[in-house]
Length: 328
Picture 1: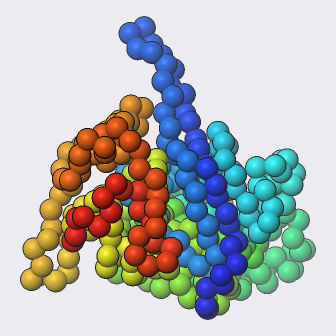
Picture 2: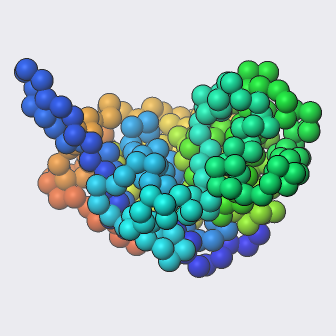
Picture 3: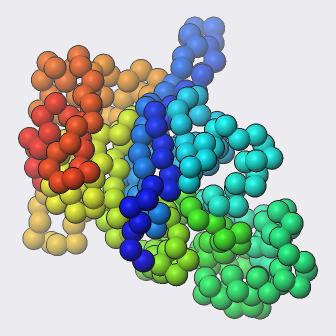
């Protein structure tokens, strides 16, 4: 399916602060897990969100769905301001917004059969009667590559890949338009991971879905994404098309991520770990947050936070005072 230029999701200035309680020898602190994140996703598009653990990727996904309430910002879905909706209005809107979690076993109630798990969203939202729900169950199982006899089994009886197929079927039950895939393939073996990624791509084309795909795996992001957004310590440091990010990265952190990813080409020797440790989110560095690990950091990087500015191709932006100075 071709990507629609119409923005389905618009996020502006999204921020989430978590207050940490102080103790006898420590002061209370406010951690900005997400700090002024803005992006759009077009209808039928997959936006890949990548970064190290602790950068705020998962929090962004949950804020967009209001599974966690934002501290400030704007989240607009198909022209509707999600943050202005009350509980009942949000419940109705949730039919269009779903999530696939990283751990399929942890996401499935062990006391419910597969059929009960998949039909539960239909029952909660009062969709159809018993006969139509059973029919829908069969359609969903077939859609994700499972058989009808699987409906009577329980989650522990399945492999990891089959459990994730069950989670996908459950997410699709209400015919959503937008799905957050939160590390949806990272807990699986490589061969099974490829099957799940291909399934998600096929479903996207067949059902006209839009994805926010969160992962730390650059290979997965490259395989499934139309556009890519790179985060570091709660901020977006680079965004652009898949080709722009992987072929001509402009931010030193993006370059460092690419260098740290193992290559299938044994002739390449670019592999190198990112130097230094990730700073504490409760006390991020001043100026550019990456300057403590950046090979080209200068005085301005230590004092002045860089803004996202256009670089290269249309839509390619980087938050760096010296974009493009480091190459892969």
